[in-house]
Image (tube, rainbow, N blue to C red; front, top):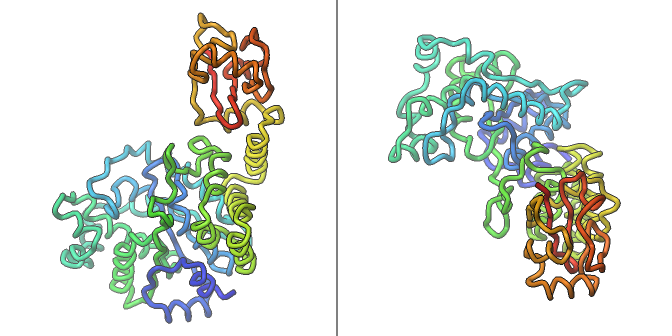
Length: 419
């Protein structure tokens, strides 16, 4: 499918500066385009993904992505979508965050090969500009009234905005202008909150390059059908960093997408073809209990971000938890799968008898209930049923001598940790 038609079908295009001009450009040129992320933390989360995945779609159609991580802008702070001033990061924090985020983005793009992407850091050019040059060479092209009309700035006038954040839109415009001149970059992509920054960049390019024409496109804000925020769970954001969000948790987030959301997510985030997605949409309508669409979504996203081996591990954990057979899992996989279950710390002086542990950990309500649970076969230790009232949580049941998984009934899991 033709690129812009595919983007429209997926619902990815929110705003364009010149629809006909962009269509003509893409039909006649292999275009360089850019999207940026500021390293305000050491990991992106899935709320950052859509603009970059959209740029990957351009790459798949023969265009060249310029992937920018803002080592300069990350030290300033984008006021877009913020009600108050950001806390400034140290130079060392920003440098660390830049390297971490670059590593994550390299997994999405082909950085070498025929359709290569380019990875850049705006500190490499912004960091060389002194104050006088900034004011004389760039500041004079951007009027104060023009900036005050931007939503990102006007929305902060009552609560207050520092001169530091006030100038952010100029600095991002300088990025676009630099990439236009150095890499022939004619298109910037960003989230819907970046419209003001993108159009400032287009204005700077026009004024500094003899009325040169460049283009901007924004991506819609991703929302859930029930109105709640996308990419958030009870335990927090879904991060791309596997240390912050394990591949299993990442897989489960997508697998648990609602029927009302899953087709939209397939269109937004995966590279599955139109016919495949339409087939999965039919499955949602006609056989939702199979969850074929959710499974496809979880598989595509987990392999893309974490790789095939991590996907297989997430599938293995999912299958084992569904069947209750924990013996097929390694200790690290069990720990990953049970990260958020209720936990009880068993001290060295505490009783390790199964009945006492069930009561102390509040797994069973009383000793009588605990004895009944064990005798009736309702208690499992690391997936194995225990019916012996004299059983002790010692030896091999202490996985890595750190924890034991207790299951009561069919689905109530608990983790016993050892001091």
